Image (cartoon, rainbow, N blue to C red; front, side, top):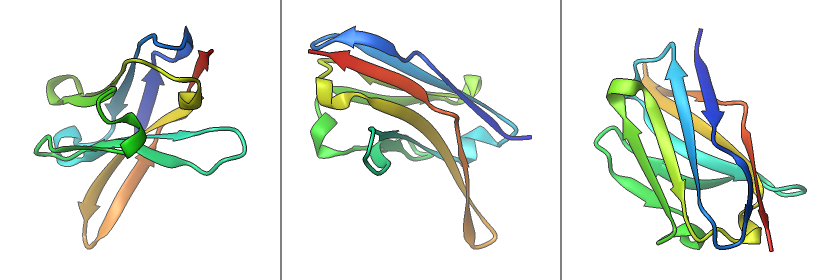
Length: 119
């Protein structure tokens, strides 16, 4: 059974920092590309950051220079370090793991963790 369990969300003032973690089980972690997505109330889910199996990271423009995604294959965990948080970063944050198997993406999602940034 595949499980992705996020933690580290919470309430923080603007300018503050949070570190999200997502622990995975039931997948071959080092063969999965990983990502963090977020969904604010009334909005569609959007990609925040992704990291490939070779640790190439990409970020959406609004978080570049503030957020850092990283992975620890030994611990089967992906992290999102968030600094200089802004109220517009408020959302439920989801982690995602994706592996290319037999010609298609095999994708799994976590349950999400709430991040609230007060002004």
